[in-house]
Image (cartoon, rainbow, N blue to C red):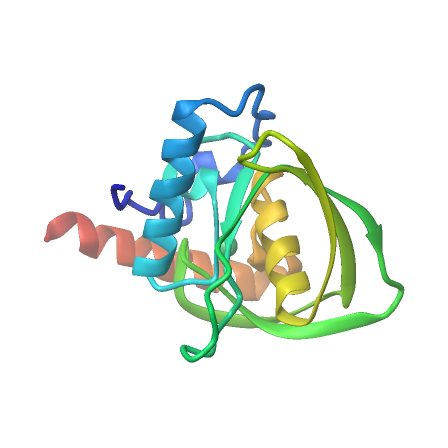
Length: 173
Ligand code: ZN
């Protein structure tokens, strides 16, 4: 397993609609391992393939926050939202590609997701709470959408300018 570099916004690869994964092969399995390692190391609760520069429809997540609980690493390939609740939920969201910036985003409180697993089989599950927020945030990444796209233009531009400055500082060191 290798920790991969996480792209920081703004980056054209974070704005792309990603391509479906056509086969669960060794490359996809290796990418899943790397993405999980990168996510846990960050640390974060979700990571989408475009965030490590691979514009494929694939994400990993583990929203088990309590260290006493058993981790639940999940790999979702070609995930689709098949149902969304009318009830909404607001969460203070952040993103590994937009470090140290947080804002409240409102989304459906519950969603049903269908995806292809690393076992090559189709899975389906209903998510709620933090899991529902996380999976929707990560699926947005596969469509080139970031959580700051839900904010007003002024707030979004302010965050983008901070990230441009951060990237200049990172490039210098
Ligand atoms: Zn994100």
